[in-house]
Structure formats: C-alpha cells, structure tokens
Length: 266
Image (cartoon, rainbow, N blue to C red; front, side, top):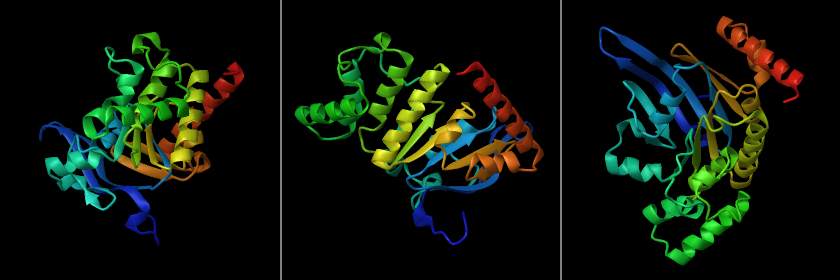
C-alpha cells in the first residue's frame, strides 16, 4: 500500500498473500508473498503471461479460492477469514463479466439481465422491468430485449453480460478476459463502453486481459505478474522505462504488437 494513504481509500488489498497448487513434493507457487492495493473508483488492469495467476487473483477476491497465507481485504473485511453467509452477502457488492459472457442460452436478453434482480432482491416484477429497461437504454440494447444469446453478435453478448453484472449496482466490477474472441475494432468499441459506463457510475473496475496494449488505455493502475511476483505501475510509460529484464521483455513485445497493429491499420 502506498505511503501516506489509508485503507479506506482502497477497494481491495492483498497483504502478504501466498497461493500455490499441487502437493508438497510438487508445488506450483502462483502468488509468492504479494502485496498490492486497488484504489476505489479507478480501473486496474492485471496483465501477465498464461499461468501467471491473473484469474487466480479474481477468484481470491471473490472468495472462490482461499490463500495459503496472508489476508485479502474488500474494504475493511478480510475475505480470507470469512464465513459462508458473510461471503455471500459480500458478493452482492460485486459484478462479474466472465470471459464467455456466461449468458443463459434458454433465456432472452431481458431475462438474462433481470436474473440477478429476481434471485437476489425483493423487487416486484414492475420494478424489475423499469430497472432493466433503464440498463437496456444505457448500454444501447433497446430493441434487443426479446432476442436470445444465439441471435447476438459477440460484441452484443458482452454488452448484455455487462448489463447483467451492473444490475445490483455493484461497488466493484471484475472483468475476466472480457474481449476474448472479438476482432480489434469490436474490442476497442467494448473498451470504450467499459470506460464510459465506469466513468458514469463510479465503481471500481478490475480487468484481467491479454489485450495489450489496447487495455492499457483504460488503466489508472497496471499490475504485471511474473513467476509469483508482481510489479505495480501508474502508467504504461513506467513499464517501458523499467530496467527489470522481464518487464523490459514484456514492454518490447507490447511495443512490437503496437507497431504491428498500427501498420495493419487496425
């Protein structure tokens, strides 16, 4: 945690967290005594190669996994030491946009978006219809409410997934590889949507993504994972100027991708 700042300024804090998988004789340490904080109301991007622990961090935040040691705070609550009921209540403050949008194929767009309201609130059907209609308008989904997921493009599915994630007015929204399968143009459109909605509603956004460098444009803070350790940056320029070998290699590959994308005009 940064100096001269207090825990109340952060939505999420990892304190000396260790997480490993496997047996004692064959253990893979994914997070090795890591510390980092995610400020409230900002967008934090978590990047790194495959198998470095990006999705593990999201599961730890949600309490779907428990750390081997250390503490994970959501606000002032330690999710690594929380009972089932308290954890279920805490999850009400999260919205999650999954990699494949995770829409129910047998439900219409309206029914997919309304599902959290029907399952987790006491709102009557008329109030649910009003709230869903507002979200449909906000995310430019009007006229699509009676369609089914199979009738939607990849970009539209992401919009519906985000609409559903926002129904309970979450304080924190987690994005797990949110633009997988989309072309570069649609990826940019979806990221622009994420930015505009986050700016309007003011929630804390945590994005795990391979879309480098595009996703960095959204970031107030960037976390790079490498072999159980991590580095935290406030701007992509800090990554480019870093002297650490693995970060320099990451930056070189990132810049190479940026040049290739520019040449192709994508």
